[in-house]
Length: 137
Image (cartoon, rainbow, N blue to C red; front, side, top):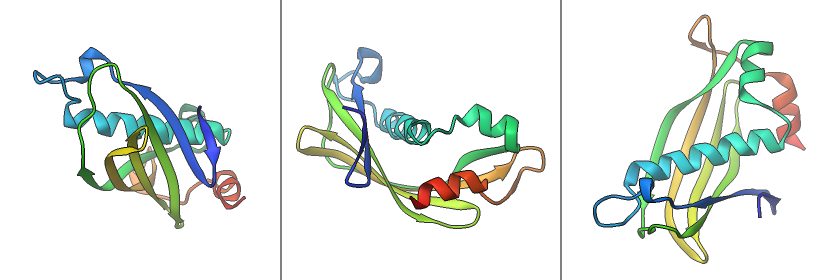
């Protein structure tokens, strides 16, 4: 079930046929899509829509750095859970630990740094105050 428990946000993901490679395993790049969706849903659960943030504040969030470890493969039609745990917030960036899990088995783990950019200037800028305030609670 989606939501935040014990400071970890969880988002369900089903593996579709289109997510798999010729061996029937999840293609490695699709794990990045799963964790991206989970971060989007994490912000949405906090009350922030990314398109609204762009309209209201002129900002976008972009991946600045990503380290991922692939541990076990998921297969077609399996139910997975993508997790999001905020580790650190700085003035213009956030650092997350994320994973994709099948029941108790961890398929992959990732350390992700997200930068806040002013879309017009294409330069780093401060994360909007309403977001940093909500993240502190």
